[in-house]
Length: 318
Picture 1 (spheres, rainbow, N blue to C red):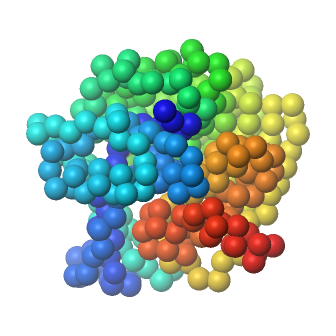
Picture 2 (cartoon, one colour; picture 1 turned 135 degrees about the horizontal axis):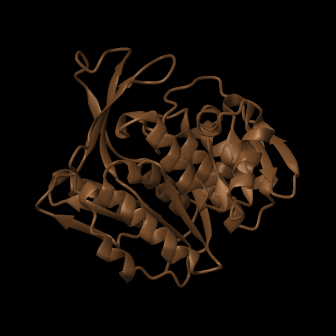
């Protein structure tokens, strides 16, 4: 059925085409399908791996749009249901010439926040090799959190499945910073591979040294085998449970169009690299490449490459 499985909240993204205009003043927008887990699903599908995306959408034009976009990308939609009781969330994003764009979310009480956990028991795990989850979906509602935990428990009973976790911190979705840190770390302790950004890792561990950040997770959970910390343009820091450390350089980028989606592109590269039998170092290098491509395009996942595009980019940037 599927090599890759994830659960999340997809959003319709209205991205401003007016550079350095506020969302108040911008008048031209382009519509995309977005969301951290959706981005990873799209990226993995483009690299020719079978995927399934689990969520709930509203029975509305934005829900239909997202479902259509996923189908067009080859992402499996067997576990997506739609409801007339709740709406599909969306977001609006600025376009900026420097720095990170301002994004405004309209997701409170969305269809995904009312995910039906009874669906978890129906999921076929027989061919799944990787299950990816983030800290965003569990933050949107108690129902979403419980659904995530239920799926983690099911997946952990299948010893052949690797669990990957990206904290993707969204403080505005949590009641407090303390609750966010405690809950995110509980989710992280259940994963085999943890993929935080360096600033996220600082908040979650209270450490400033990369080695100590990784050791925090190894010391707290026997399940964690690998910690990969994204360090922006410098690339990534990798530490294995046995103490081996790698630093994998990033790819230089001349012009940054939009930084959103870079982390999900990195995750895409790591997971597909491991699915393709690459070494951890080469999988992380692929992650750096896709992250670099992502920030050169306007949509959250618009810059994610096909296999041929990825090979050309890595060869030209070697």
